[in-house]
Amino acid sequence: MKDHVIIFDTTLRDGEQSPGASMNAAEKLRLARQLEKLGVDVMEAGFPASSPGDFESVQMIAQKIRNVQVTALARTSRDDIDKAWQAVKDAANPRIHTFIATSDIHLKHKLNMDRDQVLREAVEAVKYAKGLTENVEFSTEDGTRSDRDYLCRVFEAVIEAGATTVNLPDTVGYTLPDEYAELITYIREHTPNIHEAVMSVHCHDDLGLATANTLAGIKAGARQVEVTMNGIGERAGNTSLEEVVMALHTRGDLMKLETSIDASQICPTSRLTSMITGIVVQPNKAIVGANAFAHEAGIHQDGVLKNRMTYEIMNPETVGLAGNDLVLGKHSGRHAFRDKLAQMGYELSREELDGLFRKFKELADKRKEILEEDIEALVAEEILRVPDVYELDYLNVVSGTVAVPTATVKLKIRGKEAQGAGFGVGPIDAAFNTIAKLAKSRTKLMRFSVNAITGGMDAQGEVTVRLQENGSVTLGKGTDPDIITASAKAYVNGLNRLEYMKKNPRVSPNERLP
Image (cartoon, rainbow, N blue to C red; front, side, top):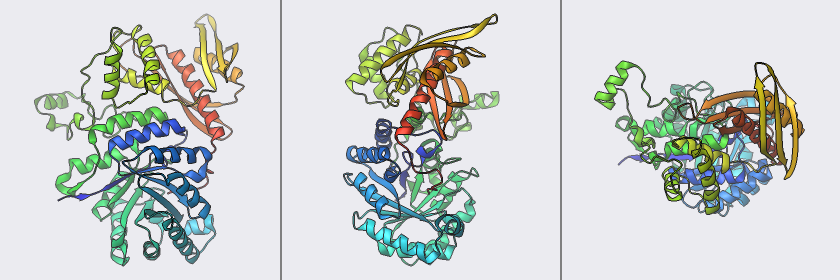
């Protein structure tokens, strides 16, 4: 019988800490439901003490998600733990996840505490959390740069205080796989009561080793992995859920371990995560990238045609990349459209379906064939968006080799119409300048990228922008067959996300989290 590895997904918490990836409550809940369908064991829904908005999101998820353990992050202060408990107490199986740094560099420069003080605070926090729920996890932030004997002391003490899971984070992605495995082995051999708790690993990807370190941790005896979809997260990101799960699945001959993940939901969850956060998955990303199962070299193509196993170690269908056998177009009806959405993993209300179907028909009048990527773009634009302070009502752009690029724009700002015109060095610049003037925004455009969602001359364009204002950075995303319109939509979406971030300020960026 294979051992079970607990999949602890922190996309909604650590993943959301990616620059510009803030989600509103509705987006978090929709992604939480998809993670539940994916089959994660534990879902870290957020950090309730960081903002009222995050508290409300965690509380909503705890009340709605019934088949997954829901946990909330908390520092070792009683106020943090109280907020975490209030947010998750209605969950079917609530967990409190508390943490404190244990490395000397953090103790000296961030906490201004000595080792004994940190140990006492860790124990008191776990005891207090244990009085609220039986399910308590404790993390040693920056654990891989901490003294190993001190880690053993801390883990022994918090387990004695009631921790049921102890986590060793590689918070800054510093360790190497052999080193990490050796550290976990040492802790398991020198912590007398370690068998009374589940050992967990949480790795960051600063050196590109997060997945390798996590697998090394599993081989050394860890039985919980803390991961995110698409590997998103602080700085270079976290361990990628899909990479760990498929490594265990594909190399079962060596690992002899199992998870509860429904692998066929991996790609739908990846796409939903990308749409909600606005973070594009790189084409060469393992498992879920656009090129993950693509073959261009003639030798590879010949081999795959003769036998897939020559150049593919996984079947695309395993991770949810089944072929598109239902072609949609302008003659398709509501039933076929609803069934296609269901196949893609989207469960929409009647009102959402009605609005989306209208947009689908508008797009179908412009294109001969609608592919899954087009539908995903519609879902992202119409369903998975932040509340609109700004709405693009009208756009007209004049440009050319002998004309000054000019944009005329009509916006709805909190329901009131505003119209104006402006110039730029090109049609998109003119549109952006005019929108910014109407919105009275001083945002700085940090990045602009364009992708064709599908092939062909009539493909939809997908534009992603990164905007910065007063220290806040966010992403905006827009799609349209007309690239200038897609750009304007992306800019407006970015402005709406900035407005959302202003209303939901998060914990200080200087506060390091595991």
